[in-house]
Image (cartoon, rainbow, N blue to C red):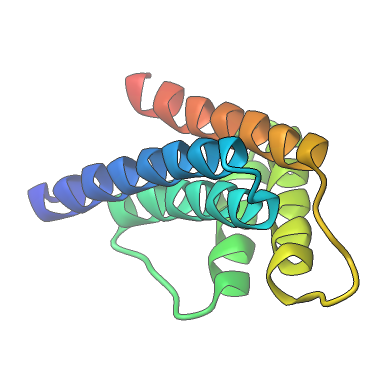
Length: 129
């Protein structure tokens, strides 16, 4: 890990935390679709936080998710439930962003904030170890 990778990782983690704060603000403004979008991006930037340490990044979200799962979950570095958090966030974010007929509920938005918060705690704990 280089100093540059470490600094990029820190920046990405700050961005992830900022997205989580935005998700909470949007929830309180009754913008549930926007809230799940920001929760997803908190998770996405959390994944990219870990990839930065390795000097890795990918252009597609699916590639980031695939690499993260293969490297950190399948190898047992992070628990399997982290994969479920990622998948659910990705799916509900797509509903909120792209579906004309499906809507995100307040309860779903709250759950995504809780999941994103738990995800970022896993990332934070990883770096503390």
